Length: 151
Image (tube, rainbow, N blue to C red; front, top):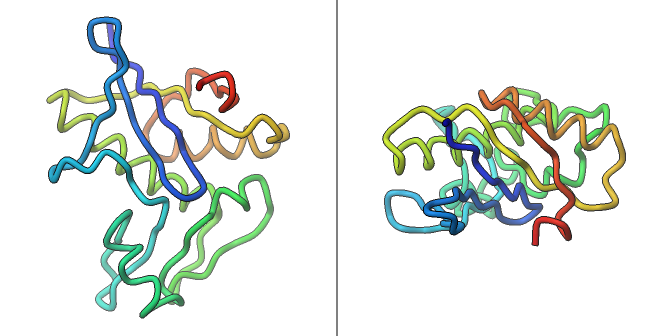
């Protein structure tokens, strides 16, 4: 049976977990950090930055950094990062892809399915945009769950 990730795609921070022996286990990065800042950017050479490194450059290079993208999910808008433009779904997919990579490193196997939380007030467009972000990240979104239900 394949693993299904539990992902809290947050406005400020995001978290990924799995069930291990019936208990939820939060997965971290190589340094043991179990929370990923929901921040995406590009460095001066055009390399993608996600999480801590993107947050660290936000003050010095706000034109190449975006945070709180979740607030724009479901909107027909594009965000300029440096010379490129991205939809909120594409930015969110970068965050989700990083969490997916954390899980694959921890499990030492590919992961293709996830349940993703959204605020209870998210409308259908916002929920569909979240599902699309998951798909762009290479995940089959098995279910979208309201955050209060997930907690």
